[in-house]
Every structure is written in structure tokens, then in C-alpha cells.
Amino acid sequence: MRKLDTKTIVVASHNGGKIREIAELIGPFGFSARSAAELQFEEPEETGTTFEQNAAIKALASAKASGLPALSDDSGLMVDALGGAPGVYTANWAEREDGSRDFQMAMEKVENALQEKHLTRADQRTARFVSVLCLAWPDGHTELFRGEVEGTVVWPPRGEKGFGYDPIFKPNGYDTTFGEMSSDEKHGWSRGEPEALSHRARAFKRFVETCLEA
Ligand code: IMP
Image 1 (cartoon, rainbow, N blue to C red):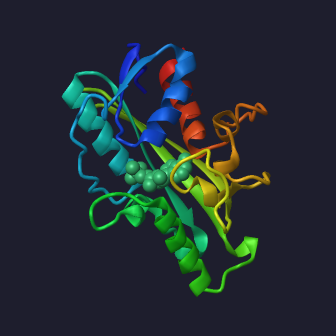
Image 2: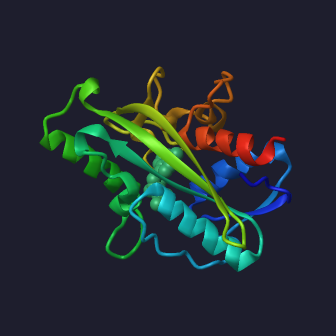
Image 3: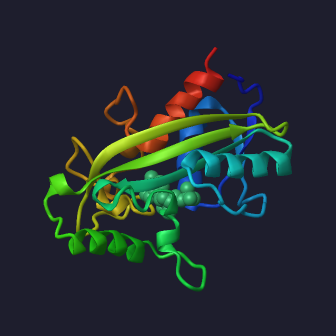
């Protein structure tokens, strides 16, 4: 396991919601972080079939382009009754023909797929969010960290605070969706969750334990 010995990293993402959350998560550790979007790096094609492969593709592209360690996130929503879909294709489900992304449409696709199977009870709509963070160095070394959070898909969408599919995901043990939570609540910081709450915050905790703590 390689430790991170620089305080400057690149956040290997072009997704505004993820960049904001990763900035919040690394903020307390005193990093100066610039995103691949800010640095105008080209977005690499996500040709992998696993979260791990796609996270590594993104982190390595930014590490090589910048000469600095780069942290990426590949994530998605896995709905049990849909065989784990949309999974690694979660972002693709939001793509319109003109290349723009529409998450209202993407959430409707998930709901329609559940409705087609007549799945309306909460226990039939179990799902998890998965995040794999990859820290890559310019020499090609990578470290991977996975975080997951279990919950259910709700309809209609609730809350405007998050991004992506947040309004239809209610984590187990909570009455609110991620879309109704403040950032601190979604990270699991507001009630001191020992394991953090969101998939991203859980993966980030593993990154801290492995690459930052002595
Ligand atoms: P990718 O990792 O860039 O391939 O895309 C991940 C997809 O999952 C995006 O469409 C996100 O909107 C969605 N996603 C990942 N994490 C979250 C989250 O924390 N909340 C809501 N949607 C998420």
C-alpha cells in the first residue's frame, strides 16, 4: 500500500456533483485539489465493465496528464430486482441523443423498469449505491477503495439538495432520500456515523485509513 506524500492532487472528474463532494471530503485534510474539468483534461472513454476498471482509467488519465497523484470516483446505482442495473451504466441511462444528461429521465427509466415488473413494495425495491475511488500516481501505481450503502428506490423523487439519482434513493434506517439531506447528513458526518453514510464517504474513509494515516 502506497502512502500519499504530497498535499496537491487532481480530482479526476468532470462531474460537478462528485467534484463538490470529494472537495468536501478531502477539505479537512488540507489538500489543494484541482479537478480534471478545471484543468480542461479530456474525459477518457470508460471502456471497463467494472467500477474498479473505470475508476482506474479515469485516475490514470489525470495522473499522467498532470504529473500529480489523481483521485477518481466511479460509481453507480445497483437495483436488485433489475439484476444490478443500471450499475456501471448509471451515467449512460441519463444520456440524451445530443450527449447532454437528463437525470429526471434516468430516474424515470429506473421507475418504469420496476413498474413493468409490478414492484411497488419497499422490500421489492432494494438497491445500493456503489463508489470505487482510485488513487493513481503518474508512474502507473494505483490503489482502489470501495464503499457501498444499502437502501430502497422510492417514487416520486424527493429533494433538490443532491445530484444524479439522489432524489430516489433512501438509505436504510433513514426517512429521507439523499436528495433531501444536507451534504453533512449524506456524508454521515451530522450524526457521527462510525462508518460514514454515503457510498462515496465510506470509500473515502478507506482511502484515508490506507493512504493518509500513518
Ligand atoms: P460515472 O461514475 O461517472 O460513470 O457515473 C456515475 C453515475 O452514478 C452518475 O450518473 C451519477 O449521477 C450517479 N451517482 C453516483 N454517485 C451518486 C450519488 O452520490 N448520488 C446520486 N447519483 C450518483
